[in-house]
Image (cartoon, rainbow, N blue to C red; front, side, top):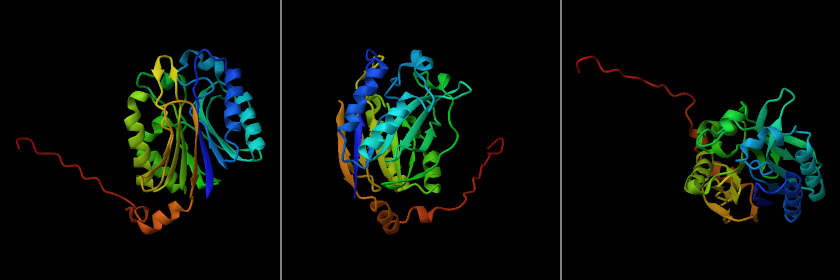
Length: 271
C-alpha cells in the first residue's frame, strides 16, 4: 500500500513568488508521511499570469526545482512538483512537469504537449513538448500528462505503450468545466486501466475561478478520494497492485487490435 498526498494550491496574483514558494513548502511539509506528494500545474507563477511568463520562467536548476529537491529529501518521499515554467538555454518556454525522488534527484520530466489556446495565451507563449515517458515510482511505472492533455486519448495510449501503470496529472482546470475534469479523469483511468492522481489548482487567477476537485481514480473508474474547492491536502492510501489485478481480470489492453484499416467510401456523382 502506498500513501499519497495531493496538495491543492491557490496562486493569488498579489502574492510574491518567493513568498508563495515558502508557503507551498510549508504545505508540502504538512504532507509528511506520504510516499508520493503531488502539486498542481504552474502553481508558482499562476497559470493565468500570462503577462509575467517571461519574467517568472526559470531553468530546471532554478529556485523552484531546487526547493522541491530539498522538500523531497526532507520528507524522504517522491515529490511530483506539478509543473514549472521552464526557460531553456535557447530562451524557449515550456510547461514542464518534474518528478523528484527521496534523494532529491530529478528522475523524470515531461513538457506539456497540448498547450491550451481557448481563451488562453499558453499556446502563444509556450513551446509544446513532443515526447512522453515513464519512470519507476511507489505506484509502479508512472508517467505524467498535464491538464489539457486529458482531452487527447492518443497521448494516454502512448503512456500505456511505454509501460505506465499510473499517471500524475497536475492541472489548472477552471471551475466552469469541472464536469469535464471529472469525466476525463475517470474516462482515462478506465480506458487505459491505470491509476490516475490528478492534482488541480484552486482559488481565482486573473478573474478565472479554478475548479479544485483533485482526485484519486482507480482503473475501474472508481473515485477513491476527491478534494473540495479550497486549499487542502487530499490524503489516500492506494493499492498499486490494483492495476495488475484489473488488467488480468478484464484484459482490455490485451485485446487491442494491432492495426485498423480505415475505408473511405465516396459516393458516385448523381447518387
